Image (cartoon, rainbow over all chains, first blue to last red; front, side):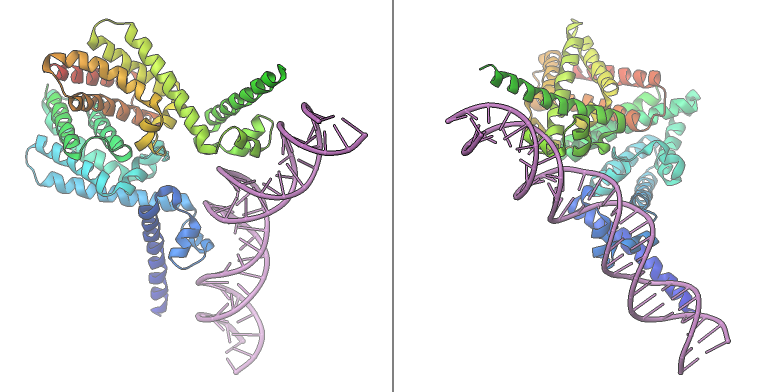
Length: 199
Length: 199
DNA sequence: AAAATAATTTAACACTGTTAAGCAAAATGA
DNA sequence: TCATTTTGCTTAACAGTGTTAAATTATTTT
């Protein structure tokens, strides 16, 4: 009775196919061009069968969002492990974040775009908290001598994040200045905030 | 033959009505709920007549974007004129920017949201450059002793902007920390960058 | 009053997400 | 093996979107 398994495997396969097809379409034509019928075309089915794998279009986007956070978390962890000094770890992690935003532009837009109602995202999706957690860990480490509160650490995290996200936002929409200049601004900003941690 | 004038006045009036109705709908239901038929309902016409006033939906959004930039520029100018010291002027202008983002949330989302293809926005819409210009003027003033290049000033402007836009982005989507804390982060960041201008 | 022009609406097209009904093939039970 | 049920999938449909063309109504001009 391995046929059940085979069928389950096939079902899982088309689930993956739906996600892959979605990402393909988005990379080719952008998020706003993604439609159920286009996905169906790509996986050689008709639109309604998608609803046997996902409740609705938003569920597909949610799944991709989760995948994005997993990828980002992996990159940031890898970056961290390449250094010993907490300050270096912070810089490496945010540079990984920066690189991810451009290398996986579509993922980043989905994860941090305005159309996402991210208010409850962290509650619904634990994966979204992983990048936050691994960074705040190191912030905690650096600030340990000052016995910082949860809020203090949170504020510092968002200081980093807002600078970096802001810079990424300009560069994703309006590409004005060169990449090198932006990397310089980024590094300067990061080290500035990092210095402010121990002050 | 003043009837021609009266008709022109009426035409201008419904043009304004379309823009007002659009903004009303957006404030009630958000940008994604804005539709041509809803606008038509509100101005008590049918959808196609809107196309006699605007080429398409995007043209309406563009007009509102321009209005937004005019409002923002006015606020920032006012804030600037209340101070003498360049450093104070910078802080006041960015605080005005900050306040605008929350007081006119819908405008801000339209002006700086991801869905806007702002690459050519400055070219198409001169109004979009006014906030940039009045800030860079003051940056220039502060940095004058160092004979900065256009690029130097631009980099500094974007350093300010990315921090502030980043902070606003978090607070517009995810409201996590309190408003007072964010204002504190904002002020600290601004004065930090301002200090870096003369260094 | 008749003809020409302008203002407005209805109808339609090609899309969108989503649901219900129908059909055909495969699996199951007798 | 035949009848029945289940499964997989498609077609059709609904309500919505932006947009355009045709038809209709109202207004002005001759």
